[in-house]
Image (cartoon, rainbow, N blue to C red; front, side, top):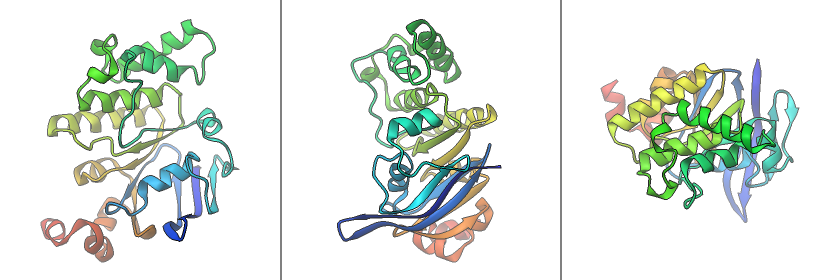
Length: 242
């Protein structure tokens, strides 16, 4: 079943084309990767999906229903959550209170919101840090908190924007484990990632874009061997190492 579809997405900022003709479908339960050079339009696509930016043209569908013009909070309520490349937790609040705030997307009572927040914190391996103020966390734990906050909204589709950026190799492996664990719970994932180990390990399919336009789509193996992708993004050294 196709749970998410983007059709011919176009976004102009003034006369500048940031996204031009991007379309893709994501199957329920899939991990779908989105790659491309810096400035290629990947995060802009996420901003269009959750209506942080309005589309210039094109349409977005969630479970066969058009959501193109819905507001950001309504899209989240429907079941599409996201993380941000630059994490921005509620800095002066504790880890627990950050996740409780997100849990109110689904819960009306503090007792129930706190209960689900604690379950989410444990799921994400943050139970030892739940009383710490968010701004005191190192980057690896702040990235994990960002995921916990998104999960607390109980999404069916989770958009992950460079979850592994800035992490050391051990933290990258932990992040891969958490992403796969989330996916095993039935959450469909669309992920932007520059670390090829991550994207090639976890993705079922990948869309590569450059200058806001799609250049290749397929399995990780197919995309990594595509001449346009190699030229625009991976580089000859990567190709020779395969």
